[in-house]
Image (cartoon, rainbow over all chains, first blue to last red; front, side, top):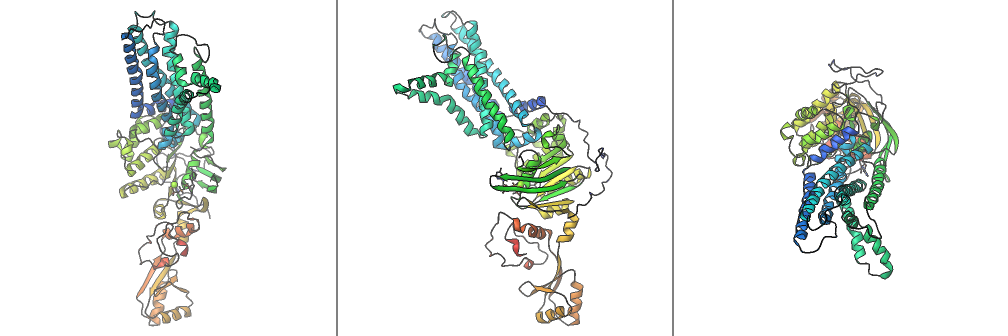
Length: 288
Length: 330
Ligand SMILES: Nc1ncnc2c1ncn2[C@@H]1O[C@H](COP(=O)(O)OP(=O)(O)OP(=O)(O)O)[C@@H](O)[C@H]1O
Ligand SMILES: [Mg+2]
């Protein structure tokens, strides 16, 4: 069938013929901005702070880390056990371990909830450079998780150091660093790994289950490995399980086997980099 | 201007969009019509770079969607389903969109006002009605004051006033020289708004024509006649060389605008007529005939197919059957 010419336009103030175009084209008075990562980050920050569920999850995290930290600290300080040889900050571990579940949830939801609600389509239409969206999400989430963990674990560490003042020789610089910055980096990376998994799985419940399984399964499996021949496997599962890696930030001495020092951080960094790399690659390939 | 070239999308074994080629031009409203599952939404998603085409290409003023540096100020889209998080307020939803494209926040208030959602701007979108959701989607499309607008079934869930509003909105947008591309199931709706028409069925292009041409070519007119002297009238008509069809229950039909001729003929032969009414097949019927072969999801109304010819509808009443009630009889 024939293709008719468009009707002749009525004179309108906005009319302007684009050069080289046979059609008059509308030009908006809104200034055109070349959108970049800066804009995507601002957008993701608004998304994060405008959801009540985000605030709740972070609130629960702080409550767990600080609440449990203070509780265990108080119990230990008032008991008569000798703690002079142990890390004075080690009681912070339990709160962070439980709190990490909240960070995992938040990390997963940052990406997967957009697939659940359909928001991802709007997001990708607004920012068709898909990798920029994931990068902005990662940056905003990592910074939020790091700062919140750092502040709450530092609070707990300061209180613990004060509570045990007379009973120990006081935390060393390395102990301070590991129990605050070290733990905050580790937890934020764990959250970033969850964010990558959320983007890969695209299903909130599935991704959260997967991540909590990854945290708990090695320990639980190791617990029931009674056979002598599996001793090495059991040992490895135990040593490289996430709770054990987390406890290394609070440990006093270097163990003779398994990760020690800042090893957990490098391990988590490697795993997260791989997962995030896969998330970036798959995001480009798949339909939104 | 949106140009599609052999655009094809396959989901597993299913071909959703099959070698589509057409152009959406500025300054007019292009209607995109097709029955359920025809591939309209899929085509629109491919224009927006959300779904990757299996084959073919789609360009916006010569560029792929990903190459647009200011996507929201270039093209605004209303997507098919609610595409936002229910826990966020309308204002914050639009704000995060605006920020991602460097659009000033003042624009958010403007578009909320345009679509009439200012009063509920701070409310969570979870509680929005279908029509409010549609308005929020339209606000998102208008946010960047773009030169191209794509609406996937914008009248879905709107009340009559809302439908009237969106109709006028689209017309004024097109009159400003913008490209407006709008999908619908409803031929009658398109007849009122669209200047150009693209019809698809099962992913294939069925028509790409101006609305005026489509109306001229497809609204068949005929004369409906009822008479107690059926034999005499048939003889008289045959004698005059007028072809006539019987459409059951004593009703005769003559193609064309021939009511005067038939009336005079009957008078000359002194034949009593109980009815002599000029009829026009609706555009909806024309559309259904066009897409009848490609309707995918048939509803069944319990009648055996072909039992009742469609012309037997009472005069002046458009056929009320839903989509796909086996229209191949027409
Ligand atoms: N992501 C997907 N995976 C598999 N099949 C799909 C997908 N999206 C669409 N389809 C199929 O492609 C076909 C076209 O769907 P589409 O949603 O584009 O139709 P439509 O014309 O928008 O229909 P409607 O009028 O009902 O909105 C349908 O048969 C649908 O089942
Ligand atoms: Mg659709």
